[in-house]
Image (cartoon, rainbow, N blue to C red; front, side, top):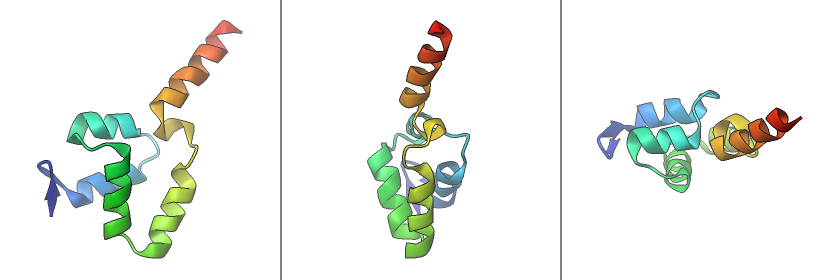
Length: 77
């Protein structure tokens, strides 16, 4: 199955990766964070989805806008 020309397995791989932010996924696939979450919910087992959500919720690397805000705070010190 494909979304915006990208295979679901590639989207899931990017979403699982700690180094790939949701903003990067949007640039590469055109899918917003909510759409990635919906794909993950649909294509993962419930327990796997719950583990993934627990990992990415509030994680700075998955939300580059939070990372940028954190970098600015560090550079001002």
